[in-house]
Image 1 (cartoon, rainbow, N blue to C red):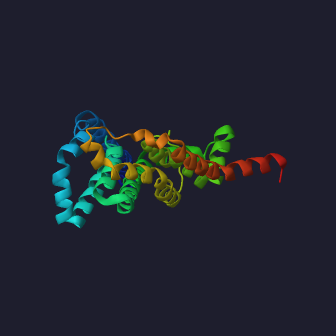
Image 2 (cartoon, rainbow, N blue to C red):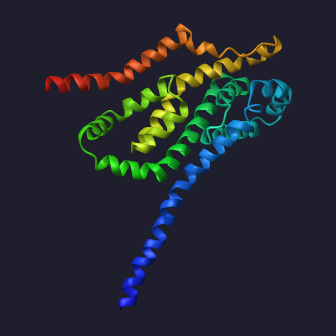
Image 3 (cartoon, helix red, strand yellow):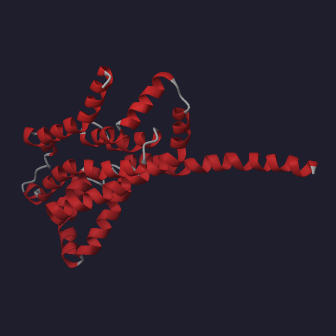
Length: 252
């Protein structure tokens, strides 16, 4: 009996670190591939590559539309999930190959799936430990945590709508602070639509841009008629947070 009692804790102690390390493997793989891809793929996932291969791509699309669509979505998911360079190029390629409507649908679908992969990888790893610490925290950290929980959807929409927030950050941070996955999925799928439409729209006109020997003008995102509605959506997303803060101060 004594030997069995002693062996059981030893066995548990042996396996717990392994399980803890295994939780971090998905995020570690994503970070490793992201670093390797940043240095090795920048010259391949580019407008030049698209320009040089556009005739072959268009011919294959015309002959195998759904196979091309499936391959495009799969590649875009990989780019987003591993934070590889070329997400903007991929979004414009969607418009170039499939038009505004279908291109936007494919872009949003792929980006949402890829973002979810990063979220879940971070949640299974660092997110579990950090969320547990936040749950046990007090003081200022507890107030910030409670404020985030009360305004979770609004904050997540803001992360998606504000153009200055990097996509990788908007995928990773929510997982680390313990937001609900269904809220993350909903706000990602809806929140990236405005930006996706703009990039896909630019992609629709890439053929003419290449014919003129020019470079696509991504500054269109900052034009008043584009950034104005996006800022309006940001204000709408922030409005519930402001209303709750005002009511809290007034004790309503």
